Image (cartoon, rainbow, N blue to C red):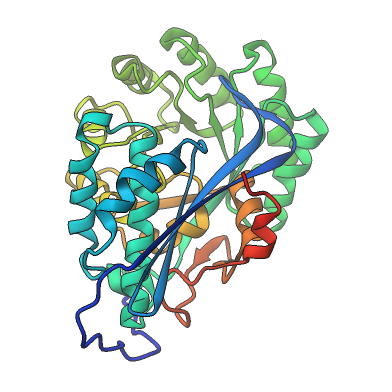
Length: 376
């Protein structure tokens, strides 16, 4: 465990401040090649960026969501946030949830609130002049990561090259997509194992493509290649089916899910059903930092590890503050966009991502000119 000492003294905020500016923009970034997983195909990724201002400081947050999220952020959420206390992110969080009561919490409502909440926590840390992880309560200096991509649309050569590249970067584990064509899964998994060798952990993600019995059959095959992590073997809407797979999967294989948790009750249902060995949460979907740390406490209550889903630059501070935490997803598409859009990104060293304690807040600075090329 690591307990940090901020490199800079906390900035005193004497005067009462209020949020006085709120900005939203969306950007559509084409993928390098068409991509697919077990249940979806896409050729671009949309990032929605929120900035909030108070006391001469600016906080930044974002989510990966449809551009329709922008309308929700501009109205009604902007009206909720403006004028509120930037030093009380949890109060703003609750006010936003109350406002969207009749709109439905899952989906873009939760993703919009997530982006704002992340921006608010960043703003508070910047107002205080401290790194965000210090504000949240740092318990480790870095979080382990695993490379994630291996899309089903890749050729065998593309798959092997990408996974091998992460191994060369020193990542201790890699994840690939399966489920698009179950008849091809074994060939692709074999190619992946040959590319990364025997010492690197291999994970797979089916994105809910299989039925419970089909997933169990695949699990037996995957065990032959020492696959240690089977993500969403069945749809997260079918928690009984996931529990069926978890109870019968090979002993060395962990079942993981949680990326589609939008409310705390979603995670509680996953855990109470005994559906997973590893709980996942996505800070860009679950409700931002406020909710992510609530999910971490829930995972702790069930004695299960928590893993972050995608958006590594945004997760790193929370990952280093959450007590029950295993590893971060270093997702290809989001790593690429974060490198294109932001300065101040956390750096990988020794297979771990660490926050920059020399920078206040989340440390990120938007390169607006670079981003504007992709304005949606």
